[in-house]
Image 1 (spheres, rainbow, N blue to C red):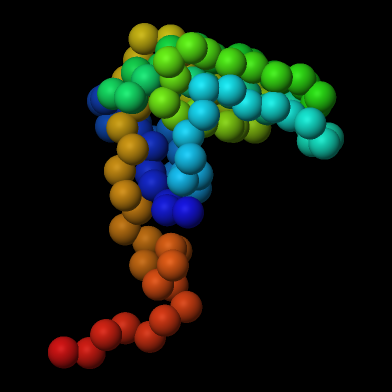
Image 2: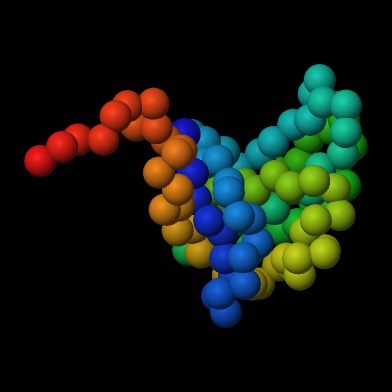
Length: 109
């Protein structure tokens, strides 16, 4: 998994350190979870297509043609102003302590 910083088009940070799954899906489930989450469905260009606030355990949610899904703690989408129509930008994190090379020594030249 790669780590990204998620920002709005105006540069506001929405998620400081997000882990991105390798296989996106237009649906999610909360089977076996014990807490509610906010689910944000994104189009290929980062536009928020749909927000499902406080999705309870043992439920599903979907958005046709969604290319990415952001899962946040319940209430976080509203708190951060995430709503349909805004555009989010996924930028690779500059955090060298994350990712597959994090456990390897630096390469010397």
